[in-house]
Length: 235
Image (cartoon, rainbow, N blue to C red; front, side, top):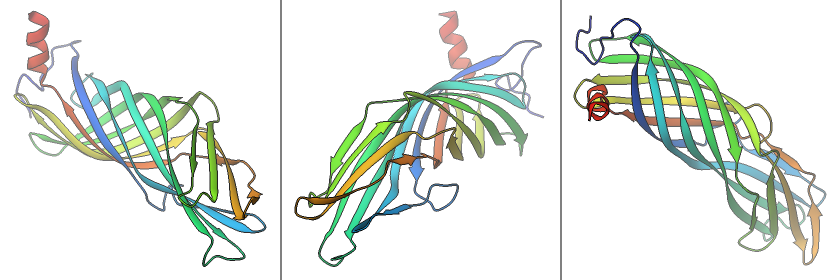
């Protein structure tokens, strides 16, 4: 049993910890994160996820040794790469383009802990995010064959997320967490429109593509010690 003041709680007393998050959005071929292939009469294009990133500030409220609630504000940038080729001259007519898509997220997650030893806890969480999307983005291919434009499908959306990881606690230096997250938006995050110029000024115009925006992420979190926050309040 953990007996330090960091883990102990008086009846009806809740520990609140300020935390910081940094994470990566990892391209994988699972959970709806894989490449999207589309084609028209004279060309084809694939939309691939690239490595993205997120960072933010968190507030975690411990209701007991086994249950917490986490909220905060998080910046997230998904990155994509477009690869296009001409169906008629694939060996010489090809192009690539990249773009990033930004959103700000307000997560609300319920956390359940499984104690492994005095300091280590397995941490499982599930919750939802309120996502706010930034402005539209546009890009051109390096060979100017791809003409891309993505606009937000809506300025506010929701997403479901789940995390699994390990947390190490210390009453003196705080809490460190590493884990993996799956995030699935409730609806499309953006509407993407693409043209591919396969013969001078002649191009294929693609039907609007609705980007889902699912991602798999690796998260690192650090929470300030409760004692430090208590001292600040006393001051």
